[in-house]
Length: 182
Ligand code: IMP
Ligand code: MG
Image 1 (cartoon, protein in one colour):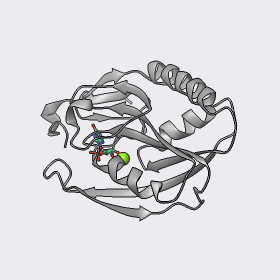
Image 2 (image 1 turned 90 degrees about the horizontal axis):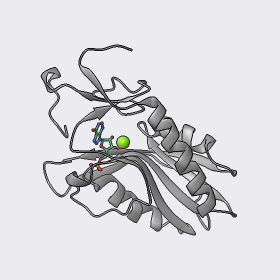
Image 3 (image 1 turned 90 degrees about the vertical axis):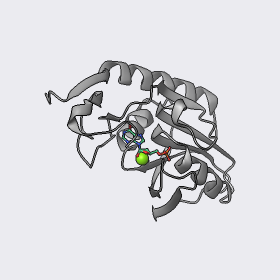
Image 4 (image 1 turned 60 degrees about the vertical axis):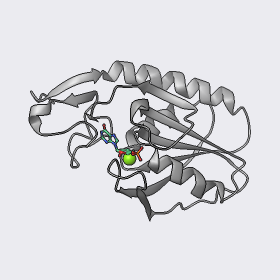
């Protein structure tokens, strides 16, 4: 797709190479037992399917839908579950798979919620991290790329539901009317 408003920040080749590394690393960290990936809809689906295929061991997958209100405007962002999990987490090793950590409000909430379901362990893998934007503390065990405070699209990330299916992660030029962190 060629769109003059888009500038490639992380190419498809770099994304795929990094996902292979993460797959090796996570596989080594969980040599045995049941490992369960939870993808956060919809942005994380592209990362999750590639990461699952980069794993050197069996992994089960599930999805959760979340919506966040008040993000960036207040420090008390409200999070709502719009689609809950199908599979129990009790006693299994869980990795939450997310597209990007921004304020940290979504994942901070989700960690507390999922802890209550008594997984054996709970960690986060995020393709992208914008550490400068953090409002809530979140420990991300597996980070694909740390990026500056810029609004990005592609590889699952959208702006108003557009651009998710780009192979590369791109910055949308400001003239397109997208403020940073929108
Ligand atoms: P947080 O609760 O602020 O950490 O929100 C993270 C969510 O905001 C991500 O799962 C994305 O859906 C969305 N988001 C944050 N930054 C961007 C971006 O640069 N592009 C697209 N979506 C973003
Ligand atoms: Mg998201």
